[in-house]
Each structure stands twice: as structure tokens, then as C-alpha cells.
Length: 217
Image (cartoon, rainbow, N blue to C red; front, side, top):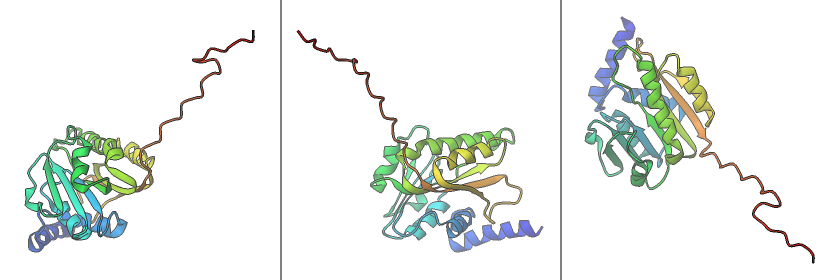
């Protein structure tokens, strides 16, 4: 009962403090504990509706920063001078459409996306969304940047954590206090993005390849 009352308090706090959802306190805690981004940074929020994470990000980056959000649903309540809210599908929206309002790559990419839950295979659908976010990173996140994604724990969670860790200096799971106790949600928090892998150099051509040697008369 105490845990349930605690989560009800987050809902009431969100109402009192003007946040659009109780999920605001998840990002507040994650950023306080893990330092994903700060003043003046460029932040992307994938799956931003209803807009609570955009609200928190705007508070942190301040007037010199910029926050871009995208969602299938409307989240224009949080649009402002240094926030840009797009309505679209991350499977169809080119990365360039997301980086254009920010004027370049992001310092942090966030995702609180979740699939429509059915109780059957939700964890696999959640991991699929996470992998789409990871797939977009080379065209979204600057080298050294931070990444935070929500995932439902299940069979694929360890593999997702390893995949993320292979691209960052550090990657760990974290569950904020504001997460419901019955929820399987976990946040993968990663720092130090290594950037796009350099293409492998072409092997040297054999001495005779593509050339004709002249013979001494």
C-alpha cells in the first residue's frame, strides 16, 4: 500500500507542479543521478507525447539549449521558442528532419517510447522500438553524447544492454523511484557514444591489378 501511495503522490505532484505526466520525475531523477545533459545542450526526445520529458529537458537546457521531440501523437502543448515538436513515425522520419531544428547532432538522445501493451510479447515489441532508436544514433548523436531508452525487461533485455554497451563507454540499467513497482520498465542509460564506425580501409591492390607492365626491349 505504501508503494502505491508513493506513486499516487507523483501523480499529484505532477498536477501541482504543472507537468503533463508523472513521468517527468523519472527523467528528473535519471538526469540528477546520471547527468545525461545540462545547460545549453541539444536534446532529442523520441516518443515525446504528452510532453513531460520535453518540459523537464527545457528546464535543464535553459534558453541557450534546444529540445526536439517527435511522436505519433500530438504534443504541441510544449512547443516554444527553443523546442520543436514534430508529429511523425520514427520508422519513416529521416534523421535529417530531426537534426535540422537543432542545427546539428544532439548531445543527448532520450526515448520513453513504449508499445501499445497487450500482455503478450510486450517486451519484444519494446526492444524493437529500442533497436530502432539505436539504429538512428549515427545520424543523431554526437560522439561522446549520452543516450537513455526505456525498455520492458524480458528475454531480449540482456542482449539489448550488450548491444548498447558496444557503442558507448558505459551502459547500465536504472529504474527510477517514480516507476511503478508492478512495471517491468527499465531504463538503459549510456554515456560516451563512440560515434559512427570508420569504414574498413580497402586492401592494397595486387601489384599487377589494373596495370600493364612495359617490357624492356
